Amino acid sequence: MFCVFFWSEMNMFYDYWLDCGRPPAPVGFRATWKSEEHAIYLSWRHPSSSLPIHWYQIHYRSVGLWVPFLTVPVSTTSHVWRSASGGTIYQFRMYTVDSDGVYSQQSPTVTVDTRV
Image 1 (tube, one colour):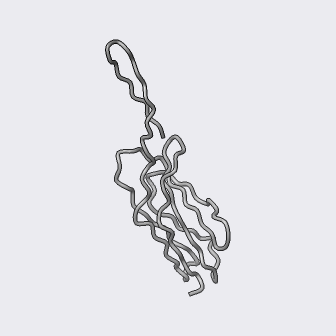
Image 2: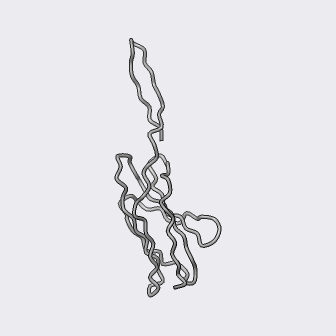
Image 3: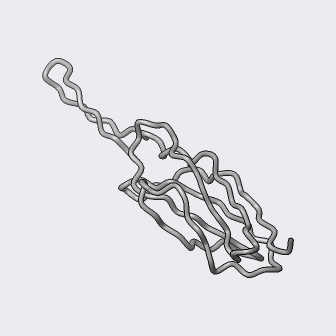
């Protein structure tokens, strides 16, 4: 995200584009396997920041490349994923995204073992 600032000096106007930063990463990201429901419960907290956040995006992988699989509005702080397969190890990571499509740094990766 870039911000523009204007100011005047002796009737001369200047503008500068400054990097205003990325939105902050989500905090407290957790993933819990509930075998009796065959579901993974994902939860997180809103980061504290003055920068606007418009949605969250969660990626996962069981092997290989990361796959974006869930985008939710900023008002959401949890999700139940009922498409998980037992006998698999999943990893999840999460981002916040602002209205310009700028992504935060990723959250710490969380791992869920559905073999248990």
